[in-house]
Length: 334
Image (tube, rainbow, N blue to C red; front, side, top):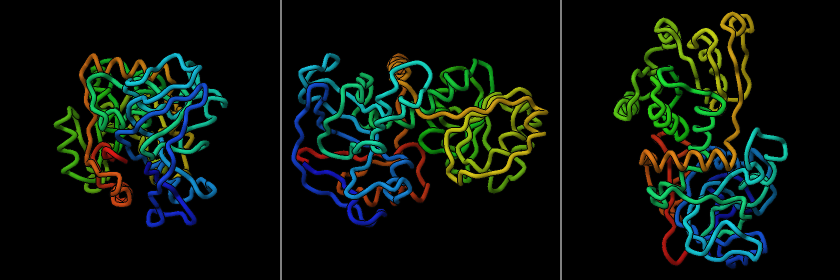
């Protein structure tokens, strides 16, 4: 089987697709034939060596496919079931604990960018019946992070206003989920073309942060946002400015850096709440999938590559030109 390996050196140019043996499932494991995978900035960070993994290393957290065989102690899956991966198999339900962050796919244990994967039963969940393999592969990190930020950490209510930054996978899922919840959505981007696409998905107000640097003040003048999903890291001051009094800011990323300064006076004057989100539990994942099926929601996929085009796909991700998710389809016989 074909497996993507970070071998000898970090970086996109040093990725290799190698031939490996198909693994055999142990008692609590499930063997899955992978049909599609999707890329996250987390994968790019790992490939570039930001986590300092030792070589060789298999990256990847998001995959969908079909169960082939199950171990003797597996009770939730049968051969033929359509499944997607769960990034945090140690987090079953409730609030996240340190133990819930152990054995994260592609971070603490080998990843899933392979034609076949053998993972613990807890690392899988049934795919929504209305989605293709390619669509289901986008869910494990981006969709679940957006759902957790909107409904769990953000507690978004119908009629409230949510501010989203950028048009990557998490933000576009959040746009879809927020509109499904009856909220008003404001979204920012540096591309007018992407903003127009966001309007077509239901965004109520859009701002180009490149051509309109006063966008935080304008949102504040509109009454401010009840909930803001902060993805830049360094832009939290803009989020504070754009927030409504007693607003909530949920930090879900740091695309522009992880260090910034914050005026505590502004934070206190608005009585703001700031909370971090790290994906979601298996229970929340099931809740999200049920809503996706019920509302027949379909993920926004920007581009589909073949597995052999993995380097091109990572290059495309690194340029930030995508709208929604980037997916790779594994061909038969891989």
